[in-house]
Image (cartoon, rainbow, N blue to C red; front, side, top):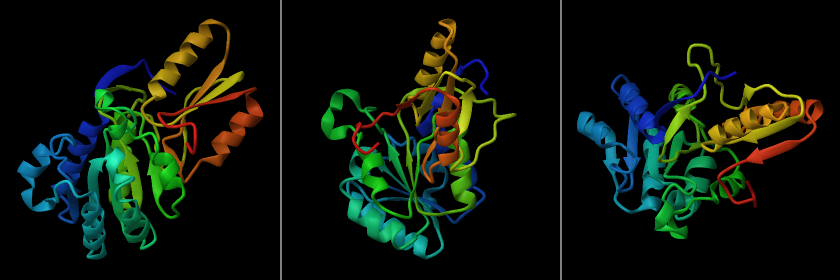
Length: 260
């Protein structure tokens, strides 16, 4: 269940703030970035921990290959780059050097979805779920708010493994009460109960799903809302329960209808 929404920070900012906090006490945490210190909110990280960040320039294939090598040496590596490029230009390296080699690299796709706005289709990332779902042995994560972003990051630092996190640019409403919310990778979170309809949302469109449910409630429609923050491993139990106990399911995602 959620509390009344308040406005938080951009998930990218929460990611960088949390990573800096964790990295100050864990020298095995490394950030590798492809010309993304500014856009990835990593300036403070680089200034505070210059020996724990590597800049490869606009070279996404090198970004992932280098990250895999560092992970093979025992490091917990976060490879940060715009989602539109890192999931296409370096796909071979993600497949072979990270997923199939089982290297604990977290590929962080920043400015995902249509976050880049007027920069146009070259910079939009509405393909990443489809592309990465075809590759085995890589978790796919899209946190909906600041709480989910922090919890995803802490979980991956504690248990490093091949993963992809999708983050957008806008400040996000807070959907959870951190004092009571429980987060686990692979376990969806119910934000609203309901019996007529279920909205299953992944990632940053989720606040809109909550708003829609609240509007439907005023019309007498009981709408369940599920934050499916993890696309892989997928919470089949949450989906089956919705199918059995509500009369319809709508999915919400910032992605092409093909392969999402």
